[in-house]
Image (cartoon, rainbow, N blue to C red):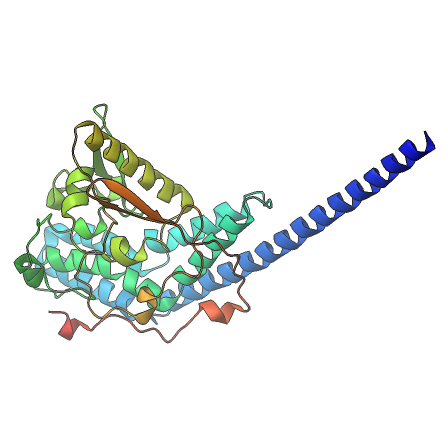
Length: 333
């Protein structure tokens, strides 16, 4: 009996030490994430200051394009002004970063989800860099450029004439924003087909892009910054999961019909021009939701990068005010 009691005591001591160690590790993890949240918030605030003070060149270009298009086509002034909101802190691109950081602050940190949270914070910090944000603005800039019927040159992308000559389907002005969850979402019909639906404020873009099915867009989409370079940084985990759900449903639908389906992100479309070096640099971390999947002849091949908990040493490491923005207006043709 005494021996049994001693073993029970030893077991309880080991268990107590184990629980203390686990609690200590969780506390350390929570402290690390709290610090990284602070760094990410500082990065977002810095970006907001740069937008407000006119330090981001492509934000100024976007406002100028909006003004010029409104002069050229007064009937488009409302839509042009709405798209130009991305040049400031009230636009959906900037506000999405604030929403993501607030969502993370409301999450309960555990040892199971800590890596995913840390990875998403790293992507938010990178997305807040002025050089990357400037590149992300090329999509709304080029929407206005295409709406001007070529009067305004594209920025950070080859000209529409060059793109047309390269072949592929012209899906109309505004197609650069199709697939970007900051402007709309895929709505699945009762027959299983998904169509792009603009958010109410952007519904007028539907007059330029027609009704876009997911399968048509997936097979024929042209270059856009978001789909080809910015998706990993400017997409929240929940938005990414919705995109994957639509892709999975479409793939299954094609499979039942004996047809092949290729992911819209299976390969980059050509068409970028003069983007900053930051856009070509992979994200520092890749979590479970941000995996790259490619399909070939109906066979799915996924490459999942190992997750890592990367902590910023200082807020300046994610804020580079000396941005390399895309090419100037005079060289955009």
